[in-house]
Length: 476
Ligand code: SAH
Image 1 (cartoon, helix red, strand yellow):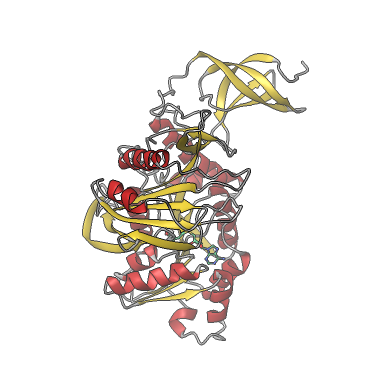
Image 2 (cartoon, protein in one colour):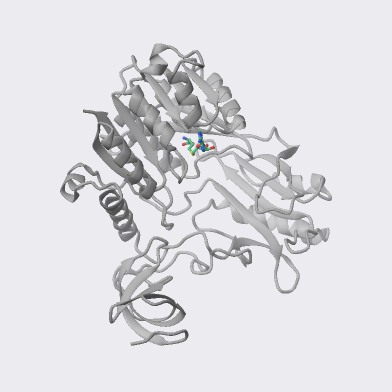
């Protein structure tokens, strides 16, 4: 059968693709169907036909899968934020576990039986909603010209209006309402990407889950917001409000935040505390935790509950006794480094963004931690420099006991990996946000003499297709 655009076919969905779409085969021809769930029988319309496969639009679910869940959010399909809200949460976890497993086998070239033996079950959330401590709402206009807040539709820049997001905090709704009514009252225009005119671009909201402190940062295409005192008065009525600031972004760009921040009220930061959890005892919290101060521009993990579990697993895998020297590469604001510092002799953090290193140093100081040292630079440059001693490194830097890495999606640079092999730490703990590049890097490290010991996925972003993984390697 020849397939072409606008053909209607009925198909059983038998698999899930990498963007969460359903995959079905119609007489051997593969169909990718957004919003279809594994186990569904669906009627679809072909949108784009290639020789062996097509992208198709979901017309109707003719027989729903038992894995289907009623989405908690009314705009789940249109919004680009969540891709798999219509899949039951327990099946989301199965899907993510399988994704990591399959990448390790296919890309990492590990034996299936071996991975089954060492891989631990994914760590999910008990309640996978309202977990995000950070939200950035674009501001635009509806068809009547009224200012609205919302989210971008998947892969586009058109705003889908919403006054709430089920993975964000409850307070978002009230904050947006007050913001929009202030804009209406004083006729303040939303920014228009097409013309570069208008003032209000985004509203960034952050909440510290432990402190309950809330920050609002309004991103504007200008210097001032009219009647700002009245806006601050209104926002301050929200319980927990700690800081209101402006971020000035006058550039015609996709980058949300501008570099300059003006404080309208408060000192521009909120706090949050991350506690260690007992990975061998149902992730119960213990210890006094580490307190971080977070500014509008700081990178900070968005799901604090799962972050505690993720870092605690990494710490458990590092197996520190207090005598070790540890490198923490791609350290951001030092979140993992400061966790490690409590149980190591000395920690060295490396991060490419200078402001993040400033935050890391300030956070170390505020928590009374003096055995963590931080370096600005690329991991693949800083590490070799200290290994060769050209930067004046000492022996504990050259031959650390443990190296922790937490790279962005593209994984580690080969220069970084090869230096790690030369340094021969007893253990390597790899925290990854992309199972494909993780698998590629593991293959390299294993061929260089390391043994894969443990693998544990963590669900940091329920309802999205993303999955985080912690891995332990040790020297043979
Ligand atoms: N471990 C931190 C941050 C992880 S995100 C945390 O859990 O919060 C990855 C970090 O790597 C980012 O902060 C990014 O700025 C940094 N980064 C990206 N490329 C880098 C490189 N080549 N060398 C060092 N750091 C890098």
